[in-house]
Length: 216
Image 1 (cartoon, rainbow, N blue to C red):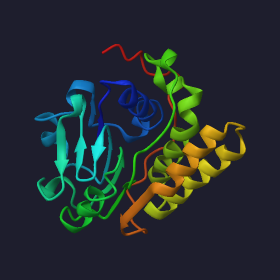
Image 2 (tube, helix red, strand yellow):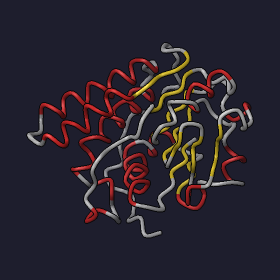
Image 3 (cartoon, rainbow, N blue to C red):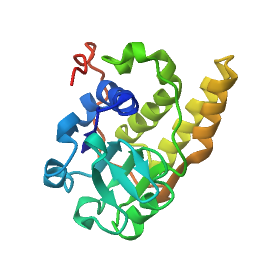
Image 4 (spheres, helix red, strand yellow):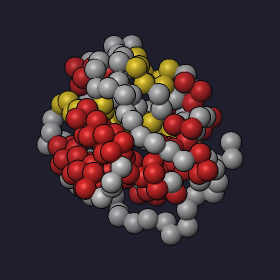
């Protein structure tokens, strides 16, 4: 299950990379834009063994389209999270919500960030954010980790692959700012639950034609 809000520059950027590189493998249900809110979210959240949510976060909340709340620690239905591997690409949820997905939500594993997730984006790519090479410096390591999960790797291996991507990109840029952002994201990725948790493998392919422009 994918929840991909696209209502402002940060959500368009993070969701855009998931749309381009993960959606073709993960398949439905994918809640994009206006669909990434209730009642649609509640209708599909309990299905499958894997969930990826982008959007804005706070220590105890994960939001969807237009920053509407989807999950609050201790106040959602565990039917939506039980037995899943969950990735939250949002700020601060690793402080309370991500561990709560294990203790209250009974997820197998949950990954997120215990501080703001930081990256730079070029506004010239607003309609096709998945082509932004500046944003890719931080977001492509996330994509690599998610693809690893879909390949059958464990939650811990997924996080390790993401961290390795940050380190590799730090070596491939002369920008001290980009290096600092990569180091920050590397330091603040967290994993709760079972590091050995896996999901059902999915075929590994990328659609050669990118998604249409994000015009809404």
